[in-house]
Length: 500
Image 1 (cartoon, helix red, strand yellow):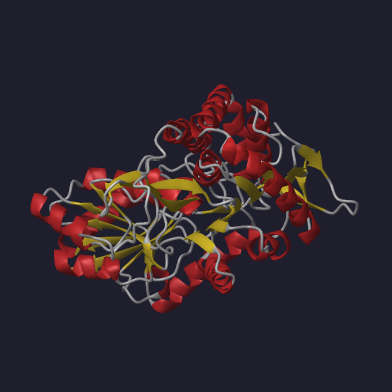
Image 2 (cartoon, rainbow, N blue to C red):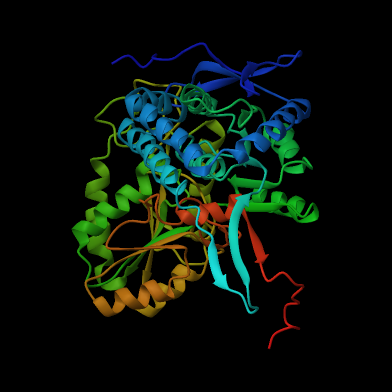
């Protein structure tokens, strides 16, 4: 199958229902990480373009908020149906633009489809609360209302799934959106906006502004008319966004990665554990915020687990994700490749033992692509940098422990708190683990990845700031609570004073 399915594409802005470019056009190349070849160009916008997008969003949001929520939801149903019809096409674009293998790309598109149908259902369930008043002849309730203008900033590793996590609840909640996609993956952003357009979303309700974080991202975060920022990306950038939003008294939702661990106890099903580790560690070439980068294993089964992992890793095929037989694709770009390799060097210098991998690969068919060998370290100490810092690549560290209690302590001994996993047959350990693991997501007898869209997604500590993507909880980011009191007594009644 040809790899050159897309080429020469040009991604521009979508503002007020029109595909537009500024007077001074400036572009950057969109690179297929499997081949190193340019497959298109992305417009590099400026603050002025953000201003235009916000102005369009402000005008559209007032009308969109007056559309009954069930009718707003009907649009999301149409979006989901269009995505379902175009699933294979979207998956192939995703693989070429981002590099993940086609099987995973299909799964990511399916996640967006699921999110469309789920959030469409919320259009009839934007529930508020009614409660008794303390005074006679008085009615009290609370309702959800739109926040207003939402700025979303999305990463390259899940360019359509995360975009749906943010845009769908924002739109069904009655908001308008200004969206900056990652510069590495604008093609998927363009395709999603085209689907919104085909589904009949009114002009200005979603606006796409392409460009860098320093120009477009900062302009979105700092714009006084954008009411909430939803960001997924690095901890460093997230902290800066939080500082800015704090100064501006602006609501912000952050999801900033993880240093996730799989715990393998002495009674674990090792065959199942190996499958879970491989999928969690090397799926998406380790470029997932939920990726397993630490394996905390009971010392009594450490050697057995290592042997099984090495055998299984030898069977992993590396290459272009469009090839159905490939299990591990490239990493996103040359900078990521070098960062991963530097961390491998750090691990060696710290005294960790390299069992497999550890090298940049020039794939025989795709010599200009960005490939890194699936890498396994052992005898890693919990305080080593490779056991503490997010590498965002196919690198796993095995950390031996002597007990269940030590395993929990090691798992919790990092600055992140997104996902964790434990393999055990002991039901008592299962319940203790789900209580004591300080992560937002806990898996039992499964890897660290595989979240479902109807549950809240997010973590503790350095992973975020308490908000959640997906699930009904996502609506809390994009709606305000309004309390309403209706006094039908015909006289002035003073709460807390006129109570008999």
